[in-house]
Amino acid sequence: MRCDAGRLNARCAAALLIGMLLVACAETHTKRESVYGAGVQEGSAAGLGPDGELHVAANISSGGIKLRSAESGRLYDAVLSYCADHTEPRVVFEPGGDSGARAALTLELHGRVGVFQGFGGETNRMDLRLARGVPLDMDLGLGVGESVVDLRGLSVRALRVLGGAGDSRIVFGDPNPEPAGHVVIEGPIGDLSVDRVGNSNASDVRIRGGVGSLEVDLRGAWMRDATILVEAEVGNLKLTLPEGPGVALWVGNPWREKVELAGYERRGDTFFSESYDASQRKVHVRIEAGLGRLFIERIDRT
Image (cartoon, rainbow, N blue to C red; front, side):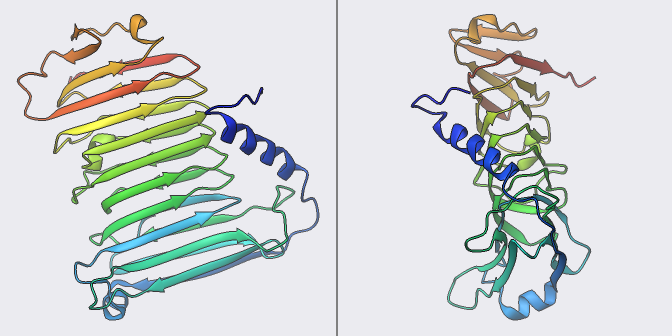
């Protein structure tokens, strides 16, 4: 990969880092598993804040995150699996109290000071389950590994995801009961898949791929108007268009002149679905082109 000045500098730096990590650690690892958790009543007693919102910050530098909904009555449950020689966990719950501050849950798996984490048998993992019905504001930092963020059954007010160097999948499996102010998802290196964005209940969604394929599925139960920005860098982009709302699609060059969409009308540089003008819900999608191919799939109601 040639590392010219410009937008790919961070990608090149990350690629070089991965190369160093691959040869950095070949000794024996002491595997350890730490378990954390609390019930919803425990969290409420400790102070979830006046509106019951919980800010969740989960970060892992080497390894992957698996996130899903918790069992009934549980505020959170976390199992952290890691190499104790090179990694240390940190889990902190900070009450919100009556001052107006929101409660915060922080979970981290980071390398020890002066230690370089690597891949020589080191398998770190964070398995996190979060309460249903508790409004969540989430910041997720995914590490070098495979991650799956399944938001089915969760109440998400805001979501920010920064991928690591690995494959990541974000799934809005069910309609989100909370209006989400914004959703930002970035995947620097590795394949990134974002499924059922229409269930996010977000008005502003920004998805940026890096070096790897990018799949964005816009289907779901659109409950409000939305603006979607999809930025591709190096790799193919597959976009699945929703069948419910009216869709206005703008595609950047050099892809724009190659786009042909049955059932869509081109007005200037924008493609409009046949139901756009009469639709109660409208979704505006902007595609910034990258180095790769664009595939657009339209799935009818039938």
